Image (tube, rainbow, N blue to C red; front, side, top):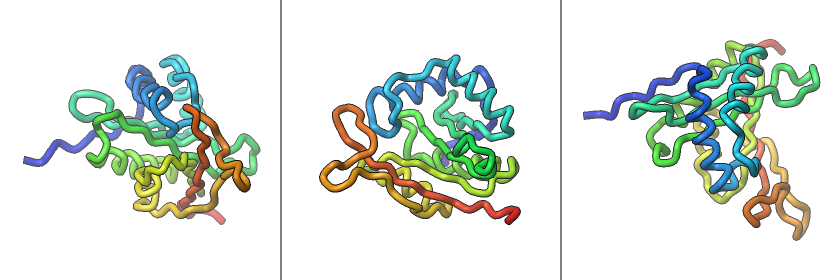
Length: 178
């Protein structure tokens, strides 16, 4: 018997507690995010409100009786000329990776970005040595657009948990008005 499909839906304020818990795991244990202090549920409620005002999607994946992942699109840069370009973010609950939740979230997010009028989606991926995030994005048509790296022997643009980390920029064109 196949596992039940995850339910992908817009996030609501009650989801901010599990979102905060999922993200806190990555803040504390990984270099996947350059955040060093886990944002509170109140921070996530504010982000949910802010993205809603911009008409941008914030989705959660429900599986196994709870929120097991989230994804959202945020403005790429604050300058008005960038208003049709967004940055995507996708995180999964520990223990729920490799089950298709990332694909379900990213697919839903891209559809939401298109509906919101976005033309370009940028993924900023910490180069941790794991290919999972880059591979997920490649499956959805993202291509590498560049790398932010240290120069010469001074590797890394971010430092966390005693490591210098580069970032890979990936981009996907959603089409739309030229």
